[in-house]
Image 1 (cartoon, rainbow, N blue to C red):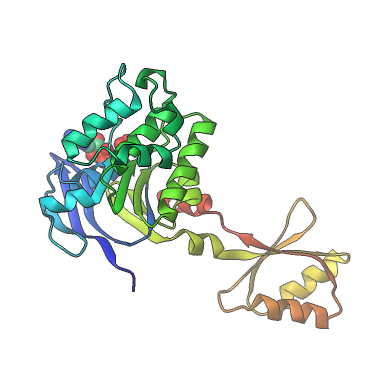
Image 2 (cartoon, helix red, strand yellow):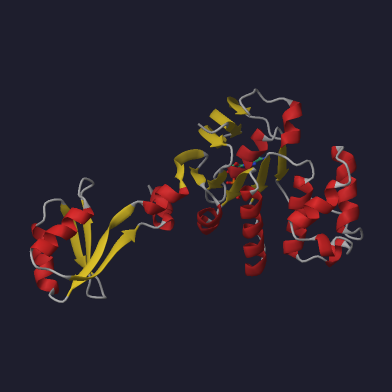
Length: 298
Ligand SMILES: Nc1ncnc2c1ncn2[C@@H]1O[C@H](COP(=O)(O)OP(=O)(O)OP(=O)(O)O)[C@@H](O)[C@H]1O
C-alpha cells in the first residue's frame, strides 16, 4: 500500500451563500500525479488554498503525511497558486536568491533547480526577457528550491502557447518521474489525460468522480468490426446473447456494444465458428473527454 500524502474528509467552504467546496473527500498517495479537474468555479483553487493553509475551511478535515496540519509540513510542500511576482530587472538567479533567503534554503540549490526546469543557460538573463513559458518554469524552479516532496500547481499552463504548454507538461512528467507527488488543478481534460495518473472531477464544489486515468481510458465501449459480408455479420451479431446495441457507422463497420459480462474473445470465436472472417476488429475506447462531459452534464 502506498504512503498517504494527503487525505481530505468532508472538507467544506462557504463564502456567504456560495458553497465553494462541498463535503469533499480525497486521497492522494505518494507518487501520484493527481489532477483536480473541473470547470471554472468548481472549487479547485479554494480546495488548494485550504490544504495550503491560506484559506480558512468552514468544516471538514485534511491531513498531510498522516498528520494533522502543522506549520513544519509546509517545507515538504512546494506550491504555485498564482503567478508569483518576480522582480523584472533582476535575473532568474537573483530572483531565486531572494526566495532562498525567504525560505531559508542554501543558494547552491539554485543551479540544481534551474537545470531541472531547463533554465540554467538563461539564469543570468533579466526576468523581463523571459517568455511566458520561461516565467512559469522559473516559478516551478522557485517552488522546487526546498526540494519538497509534493508540488502543487494551479492551472500550470494557463496563457501559454502550444510549445510552452508542451514544455511545462514534459517538465511535470520529469518531476513526477523523479519521485515527487504532484497535485494540479486544471479545467483542461487533455492536460489531465496527458499528465496525471489519477484525477477527481469537481462540479459545484462536489466530487463527482475519482479514479485512475489509465483505468478510465481502458474501459472499452464495445468493438468496431467489419467483414466482407456485413449483412451476415450483422445478423449473427444480433443473435449473440449479451449484445446490447449494433450500429453501422459511416465506414460501413458495425459498432457493437455488449452487456458487462460478455467476453469479446468468446464473441469473436463465435463469429469464426459461424464462418465469418473479420477484416477489422478494434476496441472502442470511451474517451476521457466523453466521460467528463457525461459526468458534468449529469
Ligand atoms: N474569496 C471569495 N469570495 C467569494 N466567493 C469566492 C471566493 N473565492 C472563490 N469564490 C467562489 O467559490 C466558487 C469556487 O471558486 P474557485 O476559484 O475555487 O473555483 P475554481 O474551480 O478554481 O475555478 P477557477 O478555475 O475559475 O479559479 C466560485 O463560485 C467562486 O466564485
